[in-house]
Amino acid sequence: MGDMGSVLMMMDQMADAEQQFENAVSILRRLGGSEVETLAKALLMLASTRQSVGELGRAKEALQEALDVVEPGPLRAAVLNHLGDVLLNIGEVSTALDHFQDALGSQPDKDVLLNIGLAYQHMGQYQDALDHYRRAEALCKDSPRLLMEVYDRMGAVHRMMGELSTALGLLKRSLEIAEETNAGVGERARILMGIGEVQAALGSQSEAIKTLCAIVATYEAAGMMATMEAASAVSNLGVLYLSANDCEKSLEACRRAAELKEKIFGTTTHPEVAADLMNSALALSGLGSFQEAAATFETSLKIFLETLGEDHPTTALVYHNTGKCLVHADAPRRAVGYLKKAAEIRGRILPGVHQDTALTLRMLGLALIMFGEVAEAAEHINKAIEIYECFGMDEESAAVLHTLGSGWGSNDDYQSALDCFLKELSIRRRIATEDTLDTAATLFSVATALTKMNDFAKAAEYHTEALTIRQRHHGDTPHPDVINSLNETGAAHLRSGNPTTALEYLTKGIAMHRSIDPTHEDIVTSLYNMGIAYTELGNLQEALTHHKEALLMREAAFGPHHRVSIESRQRIGEIYSSLGDAEKAEEYLKA
Figure (tube, rainbow, N blue to C red):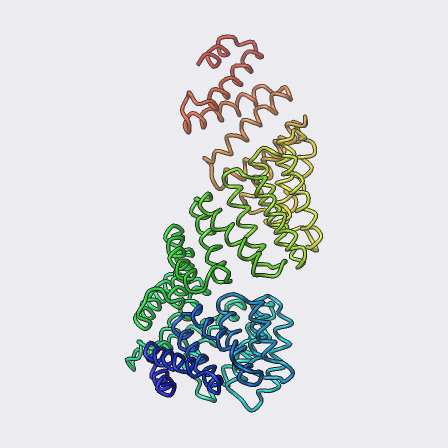
């Protein structure tokens, strides 16, 4: 029966093969005794058939039974290694690593070393992963196909570490071996996928896309699209298009891959189908269809929960991405549930300080801020910052501090907002050799918080710094940020009792603004502030001119009965009163 099962496996008839192995196992259980080793081998094959159709939980059961009966030796090491592989796919990474290390024992084995490296890779311990891959490499000199896999995995680790040139070199070596040994199209496509990701990070992956398109076209011409290799090539093409920001082509490819795999596996609930649905959702997100993307993520999530379980990195990723899409779809309350679940899973299955956990905590904080729960958001964001600090990720710490500061500001807690912005400013000035536009934005935020706290003199200082940086970067070309800084610097000087200085900035700001958008509502605010400045300087005719122009624009935009129109008429009436023109004053004050 076992031999028949092996034949059926070779014919890709997994359901029939599984039945044969189950029958064999049933008989061998009854025989016991001298057939224990044969039982363990049959259980190994049964686990392989179950794993091949995505039944990881049942594969785990078969392997655990085999482990209970098998004696120490090479067969036990094979069972441990296979069980570790299944556990790794389920997401039980630490337990998988323990089994791999038990399988390795004192005798180096290239397959087990590869799996140990992969476990460390999943845990984000990249140097440990590379160490084991290098040990495997030393044992693979006469096994080109395994050497191909070693270089593929090492390339992936170097890519994750940001060492892109090294990654590209290793992946190209892997591809050379694949071509020399006539590796399957799927294997070559996987390597090309890695090359494409690196080329994308380096700025070009067009060659990888062309190659993968040619592979898919070959399958189509041969009438072989109903094979897993072809479906995998289409999947990889979808991911490459996604990395190239061609979301429409990515969506088309990912949906096609999902349809192909549904036919191949005969089910819509296989994890491979879920992976294509997940990538379809990423493409939809890139197209701005956030509600549809979230719904597609939810569909893939149900499949992953059934097949991979909750404590799996992919499950956590889909929870995170669903929440992220809901944030972008302006549904933060729904997003919070998904993001809290993602944070909970990542906190449980990943090392205590992992960048993915920080990313989820950061997004969770943003979702909470969107509906006013800033205090709770601060708890999660501060945890994210602690993780970023462990990795020296100062840019991320600065960005998340800005998010939190903005949240406190929207909650009218300007002191907490100021504290965040000042911390952000300190980080930005520590990591940059000169002040950047990001530094200018932070200075502007500090000034805004100080304005809300009525510290106008200090606000004017920070606005002036921000303006200087922005003018240095943008030169004389009119730019909205420069205009905004000119207007706000002028307003801060006006409120701190310096109308002459205020007019200098406001005049420059309004002239620049009129050159690019003569009807912008911010021009009205500047005209109004200039009217106040001229009034304080005693130049009432100039004050009247600016307030009247502001009034005309306000009435045109909001009508005569809006509060801002009434405000402008009040100012004009008061000026006429000061000029002794009671009739004109009454005309504006009573209107």
